[in-house]
Image (cartoon, rainbow, N blue to C red; front, side):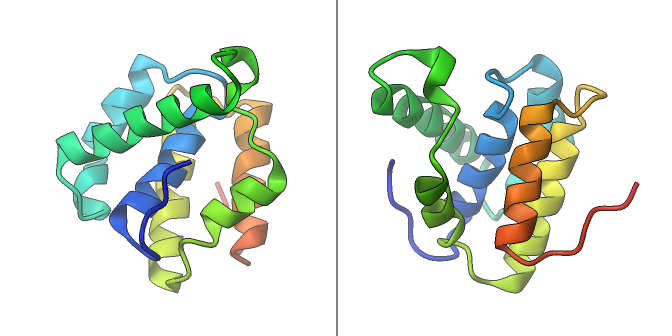
Length: 132
């Protein structure tokens, strides 16, 4: 995986991208939500830069499993934890996790894989449980 500076917009965008990919694909409603939620502004990135992070995450995931997309979206816990640890700023954690929740709900349901990812992020970052 690419490395990004600690607490960088790109590091936060990567977590949002992983939330979008948790169920194995990015659907149109998630891409629409990404733009409708003005995620790029919230993460202090341009829209093309945010889309570039999403593309980069997809490429990195594919490269890590030799092109087998069926297992590409399943990062091992130590790798995922290392990526989560690139965000230590409490406010950035709150914004990123909220964005991840919104993106997971963009297609009107949260899959078990998305729920697992969101719960792992919440626990790793010691954030309160999301209500309604």
